[in-house]
Length: 209
Image 1 (cartoon, one colour):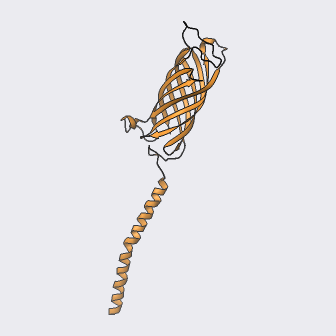
Image 2 (image 1 turned 60 degrees about the horizontal axis):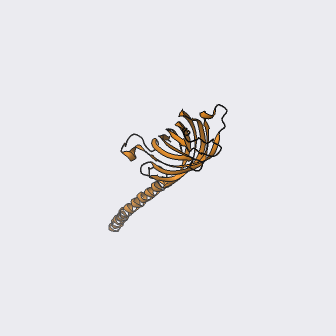
Image 3 (image 1 turned 120 degrees about the vertical axis):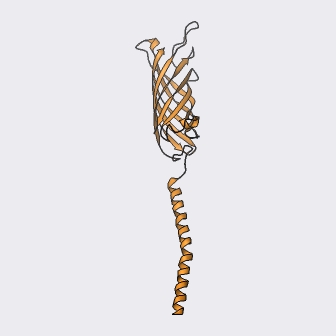
């Protein structure tokens, strides 16, 4: 009887000693699994790799050189340069790649004052992600432009376009709590038509998903 009691106590002690080790292994494994499921994260807290579509509206101004080239008639000295106010809609998609991103974007633009009637184009974007939802980027694409000044039968003039820009989310400029990772960014951008034949500053709001 005494031997049986000693054996029972010894077995209970062994089970008690093994339990914390088993629990620690379980917690460690659960933590590893959770971390593995989360994967790498981007600066704004979203997954580092994925697809991010967006739409936006922007406003700005474009002014062309007197000798803009690409088939656009020259404007003599003493006359106003080709220019106009613009309202632009954009739609595109970003592909986050950790701290950087690539993407593609299309635009349709209407002139509301001045010589420009319509513009439209496509561009590729590439750049860096920063802060809560910031982007710094360059873009290269192709743009078409039509001028009111040359009449209803004016052709569309076209050339390569390129530019640089930045986007910031509300939290990056001290307005935390307005949106989450999917929401609003404010964009500023400057681009040109052809070989630096125009100057086109734009600003607006981008809604990303």
